[in-house]
Image 1: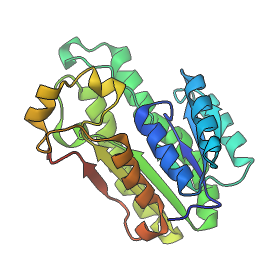
Image 2: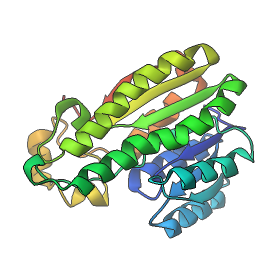
Image 3: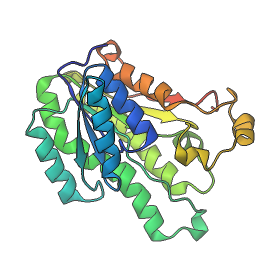
Image 4: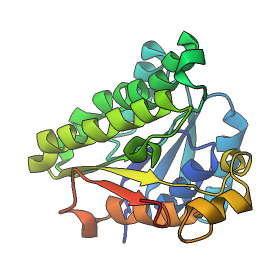
Length: 243
């Protein structure tokens, strides 16, 4: 599944899932633009690792919560040509039951996952459409489909991302651009490992294990390929049978 000649932005590439998706797209031939904000050294190291394996990568550090910073970063990226693959992976948790949730907890989670999607996808879209080929992948969550106690903010952000996926897919399908969402369940990562122990995973996941970031990346790689050109507007779960 060759993506040679394509440029791909992966937001939140400093995390385990974003890094795995970026590595997969790079192995498939794309030049990957690795976004981070608070941990720039992570994407710099990832870019070096990808290039050491013969791939092409560069880091792009900016704050997705800022309209101005995001717009300027997109302009810099577009100076190198259209970005034809956009993976909206950046997201944050800040959990609390709603009666105890602070306004900042609500706004921060919505701002990164949902407004961040808008801040990079909107300015990159027209140049992508002009090429008549594009892939937009929005990383959602099982929480968007089932809900989760203490995550009203996170589920709301990811649920809105699912709806945006369906609407945007209708707007761009005729121009060779697909838009899909991937809804992972429990995926092994430092974040998940601190929340879910083996006993809990055994109880709530029929497959009796956490997923691997590489398994989600394999799905992302397929959806970014030419072989997935007729798949659009979908929210695809990858959760070991949780739902």
